Image (cartoon, rainbow, N blue to C red; front, side, top):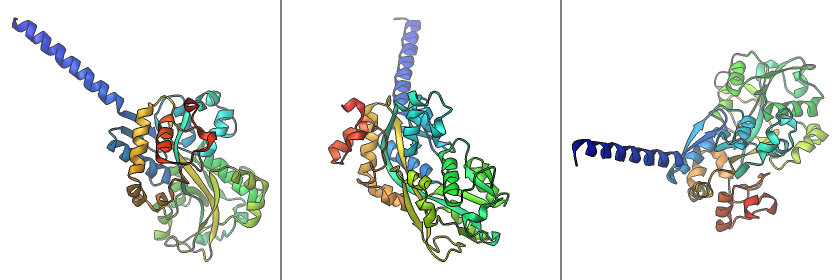
Length: 340
């Protein structure tokens, strides 16, 4: 065999090896989306991807995303894992609420799959103590940061204000819609008067306002909870009444407990991600649940009961297989169609 033949075989062999390596890499390289750093959506997905690496699955995290859009992207097969809001699933499947102008939403929803839900935090309604505002009735004529464009948080903030006061954005107050980072900065710069921010209790995102200022968290009064809008909101399994205690934060001036809207989030995937991959990452995550709990205080609330408590759509078949093996109680309504 001459030198040219040997060289050709060597090149062909290296090319084949490169293709095999690339193929193996492609099998374990996945894309994910979540919210801004500092929030519970971000920290839980990052923890999930850390556990996935132990199962040999590499997931790239793209942060700062709007969760409504992330769920749509997953349903359309553009990403593989994401932080989601359980309340989005039904509107997405029907093309209503935040998806009413998205024609592709109902079809995309058929590919949405859940892995687990978790109690993620509460909606903090924050004003500076020297603003003189002590209740939502004081929001009249004020600039109120509601949340990001097309986000459910913006809709929730409007719903809360309307239930408590009857006020409407653009009429009784100025609703400010920005991405999360811009909203936080606008509050720091005192360009807005009120900040609505869903985040875990004790979050550094809230604590930063007490380092150089004092602030008040606005409570939702009993009449607000009794309003039909709030009652309807609380019918969804992913919402609950929660409490922030006084002195939770440095600089917080509340003397009594603050009643706020609590919420669940979920870690999700899409139907086309393989069963074996999702089974492996789900199993590894739960095999290391004590380490997960030690990552952040709010994660301690994740257990066998809460993991499926706010799942509003089908589980992924891989997660379903793990939960059956591990003895989780799986409601019939969330059994994936592939298992029926």
